[in-house]
Image (cartoon, rainbow, N blue to C red; front, side, top):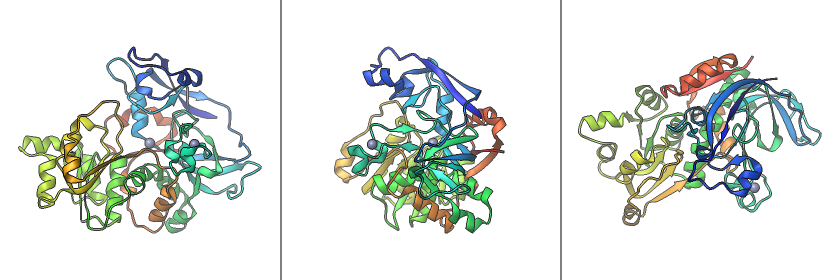
Length: 390
Ligand SMILES: [Zn+2]
Ligand SMILES: [Zn+2]
């Protein structure tokens, strides 16, 4: 089958200590410290066959993720920017939906023809982290599109336990194609769902919410905060296009921090103005720019406020921890979207028309134009670029 393959050179930075496990597995825990000179190439790879507990999904839609962009872009020394675990070569792509075309001998619930979206964090299911409700922290985790074969290919094999059916969405929309496209948005919406409602324990109707960074994850956070009954949703991004999308998805105001600085104000000052001095009860960092966002966020906590950190960066960021003491505030990290009822709840929100995320898809490209789509993603003006398959 046709696929896109990501290759790069294993060349650990001098200060990075490669562990024995990394050397044995070829999987770098922090890819940005190890993988250099990335190349996305068109490849022909064998068709997957389903294992006993697996289904084969014909990919019909796959969103280009900021993490894909971060595997394409490099720092000044040629290292990829993505800081998660990566084993190469790999077929990238993890925000996908498609149609089941083959089922393994032990598959119980899925049938050929079912439309599904699938979780991309392949947790083992039997370790202590998995069995104590931390599937995204499984030490044996493989990530679809980073350390396990992904969806920029005609087919992907995936265990039944990671799949969720899209029939309720297809029934509402009356269109399999439209359901599959929304299906490919479930993963990036489930990441903020996991951060805001599982890791951070949720928000209350009437809360003030701020979202830093209006890429797809931040836009998902905006839509979810609105659906959860936020009094105010305030968004910040440096892209005018993305700020307009944030307003379309439910933000009350969206501002460019650079324009605020030029006007002699700041995100923190705007948050105090809009919330009449109270601050935000929940602050979502989806920019992956902690050096610039943390100084604003630490001045924007409401008493008891929660910050959810979803962005990824290999940088250390200074934080004035004293504000957490005086404000009884908290910072919650989160990665991933598995378990915790994330996928099924997001599917319900879509099936019952409670979040209106379709405007997030600002570009569609056929699979044959994958490289152009990847280059376009570097401009960071789109919401979601969706790859469509024949
Ligand atoms: Zn992603
Ligand atoms: Zn596990």
